[in-house]
Image (cartoon, rainbow, N blue to C red; front, side, top):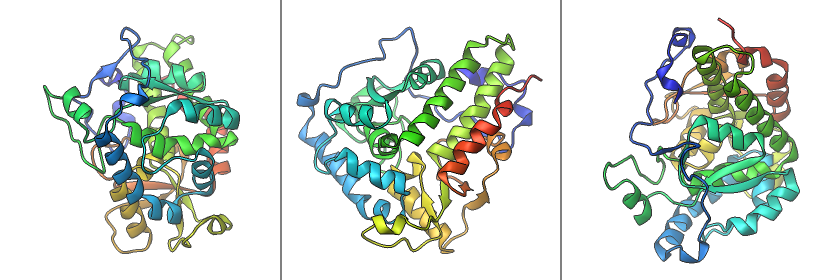
Length: 310
């Protein structure tokens, strides 16, 4: 993992300790690709999925961005049953050229970006608070709640990320982020491990503050897609928010001025790239983009930010 390389960490804002301790991490040396055994899923797992899914139906309809709402409808996810990847994959491939790959758990950066560069999105087949999750971490407990678990589970992966993959422009953008991450790690430019680690941390910062925890200004036409009009001045596109009822409610409260615990910052790619993050808490800041198109363009226009040479 790249956390051991810290020579350039002093350049970052908002330095945070690594908060994924205790998580089982899979590398190229592990059998990380598995098959989803859908028929073996328990009633308990379907029930947990149903509880988590239904709790977010209203807030996501009201606050998610248009790309997410349209993608969710096209996927046809069932609220009462865990998703079957064999059913979802043909829809995703047709929409954006991506496919879901079932993995055994949290992947290291080498595997993750290599998969993303090939338009393969890793998803786990395990859901938070289930017996299988408890068994996996029987020798060392991790935070495992309805609104958060540090190991991305099937609910975060599918409810948060996958609807956005039904949008071709978003899919192209995410693949290009994956290609860049893969290129940084291969280090064909011979920068060395300290600079490779630093530049990948920059890309991880960008990913965290955008497709994981990003929000955008309220768009003019999205309310035509909603059952309930959006009553805040922002929309949500980050998967880490959309897979957490608590974080979604927190964003709405901050946007409407009901609390001021988190700051809404106009998006600036240079600042986002240089700002570290905390895995384990509700975010203390959110970067606000003008539109999805402006996010994509900022990424393509500022590639030099990810090739710092010391």
